[in-house]
Amino acid sequence: MMSSIFFMPSISYMGEGSVKNLGGEINSRGLKKALIVTDKVLVDIGLIKSLTKVLEENKTEYVIYDETKPNPTVTNVNHGLKLLKENGCDFVISFGGGSPHDAAKGIALVATNGGDIKDYEGVDKSKHPQLPLMAINTTAGTASEMTRFCIITDEERHIKMAIVDKNVTPIIAVNDPELMVNMPKSLTAATGMDALTHAIEAYVSTIATPITDACAEKAIELISKNLRDAVADGKDMKARDNMAYAEYLAGMAFNNASLGYVHAMAHQLGGFYDLPHGVCNAILLPHVMRYNAQVSEERLKKVAILMGVNPHTLKERNPAELAIEEVVKLSKDIGIPSGIKELGAKEEDFVTLATNALKDACGFTNPKQATLEEIIAIYKSAM
View 1 (cartoon, rainbow, N blue to C red):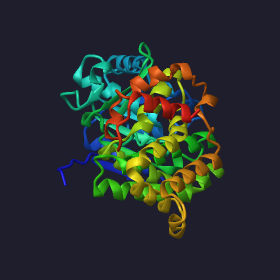
View 2 (view 1 turned 90 degrees about the vertical axis):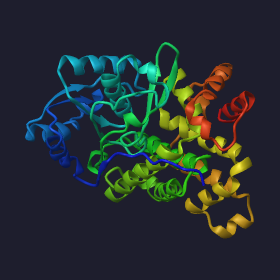
View 3 (view 1 turned 120 degrees about the vertical axis):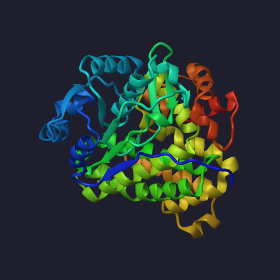
View 4 (view 1 turned 180 degrees about the vertical axis):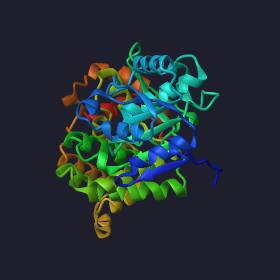
């Protein structure tokens, strides 16, 4: 087996009330003033107070940047960076789901490396560690609170840039399910399917290892058993807690085994049409699984078992198709749209989308490398 490397935050807090541990971590590092990167919804509903109360009790100064868009942009990074510099902040706290985390990563990275966030598109383009970043998660899906992945939309090119860099990994990750109970059903569903996509793509990746396999397998099992309950009853703390662990495990898997064509293609839909990432992933996942089944049937057979398919049934039916059916059924049960046409995708855009998808770093570890025509065909099948 070839040598491998494993990335994750040095410290992660899990479980109910874990956000309260932040004060001690700030003090131990001698940090004084935080730029909080979040969005207006979390400020308006008052959830941000669960963080600011901790900071105020700890006598830590802060300023809030709440302009983050659902698909964070270059402009978000620039505006947040300006606010950070104007207020003399010496560290960053992201509070929310993948959007605030990614925006915060961009801000913290450029703060110490200079230039423009566009300069860091690709793999390990930075030279210096980012400004200290602590990530507090309020969704169970993206795992951006603990990964070296940062996705920023370039408004000029209408694409999502994949920045994969060890220097954007937060130093502290917090997954407190108490912060997740008020997530809307649609967001719970979309982020949960995002986590499932992370786990499955990492599991069939060309650089998967026994460590990432173990993380992916447990994530798939937990999501299959808990996502429906988390969507049905947001205050089901057992389901919420298990989904928090599941999304973190899926993050551990893809943070080190990387991803595949689901993400490479979903990034283009999100960047081109400004669509929700998790929903795009959920719709594309079964179609990419069917493409990957040409070379990954044994892996997808295990996915089917992890999702609850009786092993005896595998002798009667195509194992990969059974795995695909389980994914489609889960998506349907939690209200995910059935096709990208419902989201506004147009066939005349597929050449552009497919061309950009093949350039996306996430696709480099897909188990089978595709032609432009094959990517277009997958988009068409997902309509």
